[in-house]
Length: 332
Image 1 (cartoon, helix red, strand yellow):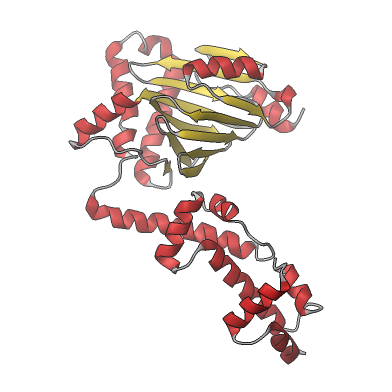
Image 2 (spheres, helix red, strand yellow):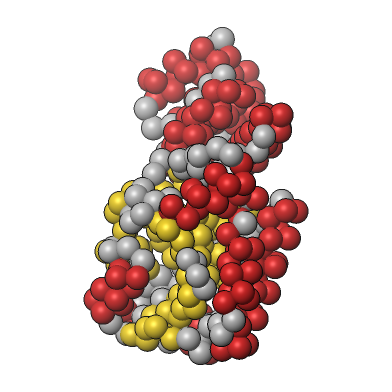
């Protein structure tokens, strides 16, 4: 048994005094969790013997607060989900979440929200311990309409980062509420007003954190989001100049969807992510050839992920106005 699994078995999951499920069977866990959340397919990706599913639950009024762990690496495929929102707050570990056309890497610094009736796919790390806040979509829509005088947009933002002060403030208070339920749940659950107050605060996330900002702030928010996305994508590209990069790989590193990444690059770079990556690799080849490094032009091209020499030579000529062999000879 690995150290990671041993640690998972000894960690106490919050709300453990309110158990719903304890199981070592993937089929049993999938069936029983599916009845509470959404029917889904569960694939154990880690060591099958390490699977130790724990699910706990406290129901407030309309909102259910759950904690869940699998104890090993899993892929969860609900397909098209039911008619409810599911906010995921990782206590530790990581969940790569794809919902509709968007995706996000959710960890202790990034919460995620699964949209109602949206095609969804998740991959949880072996050490992932998760708080789940589940609420019917009509409750959220009613609340958003009350707070904004507008119907609930579909979908809400998929994720919110703890680096944003208002997200950090809400998240810390939510953790305090969950800790209070964990330690004194029997007391609080006997008081409807207390439950309603806790739920009111937890639901505030759907308007305070996940709604698009007012129009005057929208452009600044988009710019900040684009800048983060571009920085992550470019950092990944320049760290992997020796590879023929795939769009999915770059998008995954940028914590966004391939389609969104293409829109961001077109908006700010007037090109596609793959064209940007190819140009960066061409410049890396050019710099290497100018320094006279490498055993040959072919060797340098191959070491930077170019496998079609004719196409590489044409692209190089278009970029630098001469064939790569000329750059190579000038450095000898």
